[in-house]
Length: 151
Image (cartoon, rainbow, N blue to C red; front, side):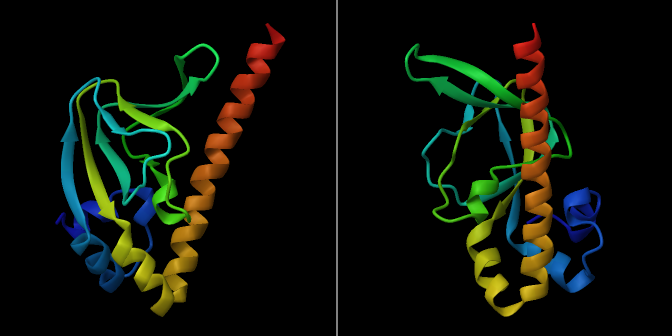
């Protein structure tokens, strides 16, 4: 378990009251992944949402016809990844690979999903923030695609 104070430092959890932060903190643990290791691969069932504390993570996809892995986006400290852990069917839509040694906060999403049924306000706040993460990723990939096509 990480402390509620640690969670409060990250924008994804900002503005949540103490009771909700304590609940979330109880569903977390710190972890580390070595450079070159995968957090998960495309199609894996996801149980955890990750907040990157230190390091860098590449969100990747494999080109089926070439068998080559390409980087779709890069996750920096303070950012959230593995959003599919909160969205049915809870399967990864890409892979996440540590490009340097990483420290993360792993949030177990099973108790969080159950809590959403009782605490709709928490569910609304968390899913709105998750939608913002997805919006930002789509925007970044769109800009990168436009830049590639313009060359």
